[in-house]
Length: 110
Length: 116
Image (cartoon, rainbow over all chains, first blue to last red; front, side):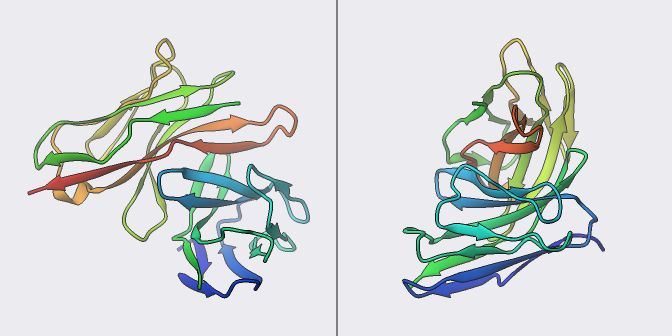
């Protein structure tokens, strides 16, 4: 079955460390997105990519980086520059206005 | 920019009660409108959508009508079940003026708690 796979489901990071969240899709979707979810704030867009080797900053890109070397993959790196990284991260992909979401990664700074 | 406003929760109901979750939007142009549902610890699932004014989206007993005159897309269900307990997000599709790229803009979410 086609879908989006995010891994890991839970991730713990020490302060000052970079961590990378994985997002893989086998839907053949061109566009991919990363959203951050905090309680009471809904989902906010971090980065998005329309095609391979191209990506754009969303509303809250500071402290994050991405790459899009393959159509299927859109990993997100949370860098030490992100001051408050504890959150739930959701990856999504889309084609012709239809969106599919992964099951999310919960990142906690310890 | 475009935005979505949802009623704050939690909304607490007894089983078989009528549900309304209000959603209003601000947008230029004619966005598509969506309701997504999120169960605990999971990602978002599309519940229903509407792509133009007066369209009604429906799924699993939930309905919402795209009202351009009131810029609203309220979610309704005639008889809720305990299994409907989740967080519900209203969203619109936002075409970037400069990028020509479509992305979703979400409301803050409304938690629904249904008791037996």
